[in-house]
Length: 99
Image 1 (cartoon, one colour):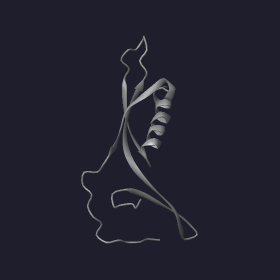
Image 2: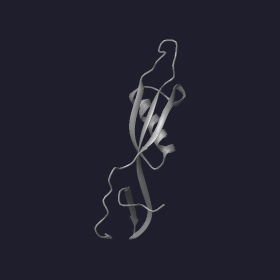
Image 3: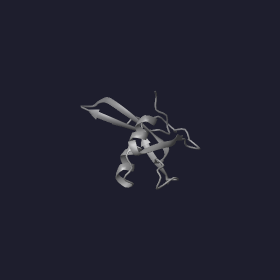
Image 4: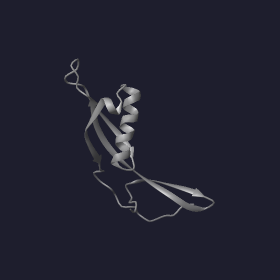
């Protein structure tokens, strides 16, 4: 996959050689705790996550949910996963390569 002008691309250099690039995308993940007898309608939580793909975005969602709301993956469910795209992506004026 080739990165375009709107993607967040990070280049890692080791001894002046390009070895890896990582393209980050934005996702909205909506999830909640499972319904119980005490809480039949649990609160929905929506989180904006930056990740390489949807699988890693869901994983990061559960990482933060465990710390912020004390809900683990086995105690909850993901309602929806959607990628956020930029509305307008202006072209780059000139392709520059920096060292």
